[in-house]
Amino acid sequence: MAPGRLLDIGCAIGTELVVARERGWQAIGTELSSSSVRVARGQGLDVRDRLLNECDFPDGRFDLVTLNHVLEHIHEPRPFLAEVRRVMNDDGLLFISVPNVNAWMRYLLRRNYSWTFQDDHFCHFSPPSLSRLLARHGLAPIEVKTSRWCDFHDELRYRSLPFRVINTIVEQLGAGIEIFCLAHKL
Image 1 (cartoon, rainbow, N blue to C red):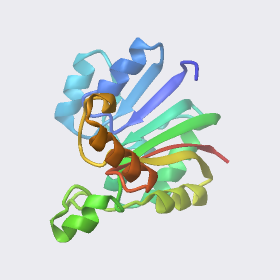
Image 2: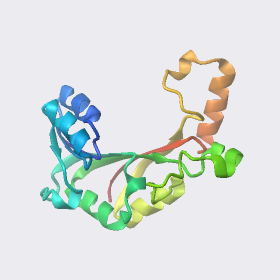
Image 3: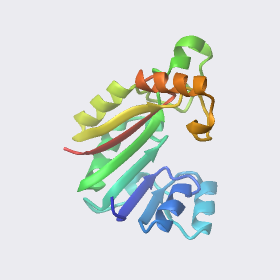
Image 4: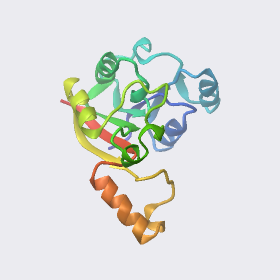
């Protein structure tokens, strides 16, 4: 995808906006944390400190919208997704990452599994439930997958063979700790 106009909803301190800007994107963020907004704006980033529906973006404004660990914090995802869809252009893409309610660790740890179930997580998603929600709002998943069997940040190739095998199996079963989804408008 060639650089265009990007909207990062819930951009925090603007890390993704900085990368997007470096790669030639016209990047805008929204963020409700005043301290995060100060940091982001201090880097010269265009960050709006309002809810998406209060930003008055024109219809079809963005080529790419990102929701990186945002959707689980939304009380009412239906009107929110309608607004996301409205600001996407007809050929635009939506990237979502959320915790996976069907992560393998949830079944093992049960009540003690807290990564998905936090006080500020109002919605919980599995790959099929996220796909259905998007479809109800005129958004078609291009790819939905889960990642990582545990929280690690180094490249998988640097891990032992047994570790890589377990990770591959968990990802193939859709039981990784996060869901990554790329979608477009129907």
